[in-house]
Amino acid sequence: MSSLKNNINKTTEIDIAIIGGGSAGITLAASLNNVRAVVVEPRTPIERDCSWAFWADRVQQKKFKAATKGSWQQWRLIDHQTEILHCSEKYLYTSLRSADYLAQCESALAEGVDLIRAPAENIRANGLGGSFTAAGQDYKSAKIYDSRPPKIAEGGLKQHFLGWDIRTKAPINNPHIVTLMDFRVDQSRGLHFIYVLPFSDRRLLVESTMISASLEDKEWYRQAIHKWLKEQNIVIEEIVGEEMGIIPMQSVAPLDEDIAAIGAASGAARLSSGYAFSGIQSQISQLAAGISRGHYSVPPPISPLLNSMDKIFTGVLLAHPELGVSIMMRTAMALDADGFARFMLGSATFFDWVKVVLAMPKAPFLKQVLRL
Ligand SMILES: Cc1cc2nc3c(=O)[nH]c(=O)nc-3n(C[C@H](O)[C@H](O)[C@H](O)COP(=O)(O)OP(=O)(O)OC[C@H]3O[C@@H](n4cnc5c(N)ncnc54)[C@H](O)[C@@H]3O)c2cc1C
Image 1 (tube, rainbow, N blue to C red):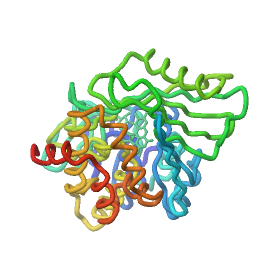
Image 2 (cartoon, rainbow, N blue to C red):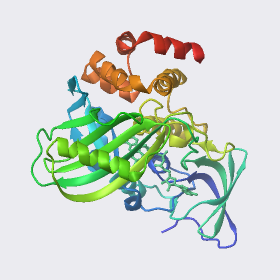
Image 3 (cartoon, rainbow, N blue to C red):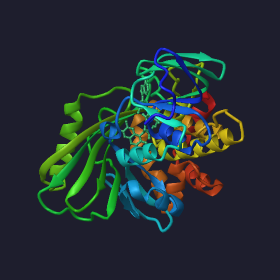
Image 4 (cartoon, rainbow, N blue to C red):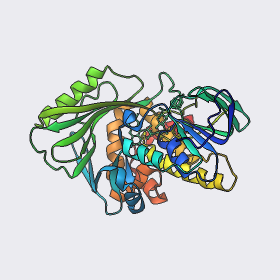
């Protein structure tokens, strides 16, 4: 039930409007207190359900327990020559059921913070705030944060994937190990790997993931999954669901430059890996703390230094796609499990970086540094 007065045909004035109630928008909305705010989101959590994975430390393991679909201490990367197995004491590779996380945040909204299940339209910026229409009602807000997905540049490097949620006929081997990247697949069209989350010994998420500039036909990813499963002697009993995603690996532009962007629209997805969840959590907790003190500017989700390092990495991948497998394998080999998790989370120590830099092929990285 809305706590705002339903002034049909009159403009409703609020303190904060959040456009889009995805990972960033609903997390921010759920952190607000003592304000008149709305979060505008057209789709229900279940309509947007997918798996959000990240490396969770002990605090996060507790915090996100209720939405956790699976968590693993061990993960592996594999190519034709080597299998690297990491086992961490500190971090669990954790997959959240996004629908559960979103629904929990929606039900935790404080009094005065309303969810409008409709698209925001006619959005107009005015200073830090602006106006828009949603569900036939006009709103004027002192501050607006926009989390609508950013524009993806045509021809830019992206991570694109198609995944199947499957039930298998027989139990699989090693259901306690996540396959982060299995490179023993067709590498002719870009850096390609199979990603597997074993939620049990008979229930898996299997994705064919590409890092390249051009998308493939859906059938191409499906064939890749089929072939990989056949080679592993895994027989499908049922395909329970299919998900697709495109995550930009180049700097993104928000839909409206005049409105403060949050989440992926503000560049929260790591350019080198596409992981966004941790960056968003940290951005939103800093922003919410700022708002409670009367500071409304959006902190960058990723430090400029880390962004520059990621740009060098993606530049090398674009110029030398044939080095992709070796770069990923060398990175995983140079680090232990905790170092690898820190590296992927964007919180690598100086020594983690030294190990990774020493493991890289020098010439292409130096060339890329000189180009920036
Ligand atoms: C299938 C998939 C799997 C992913 N897996 C991972 C993962 O495992 N780990 C990870 O870290 N990242 C993952 N990502 C990256 C992902 O983009 C982010 O983790 C996260 O969803 C970004 O959050 P966000 O709030 O910025 O954007 P979103 O969660 O995309 O939220 C934007 C919201 O804006 C809403 N919207 C759009 N237009 C309007 C409008 N006009 N008015 C109001 N609302 C509007 C949309 O409905 C949407 O809910 C995945 C992405 C996809 C697509």
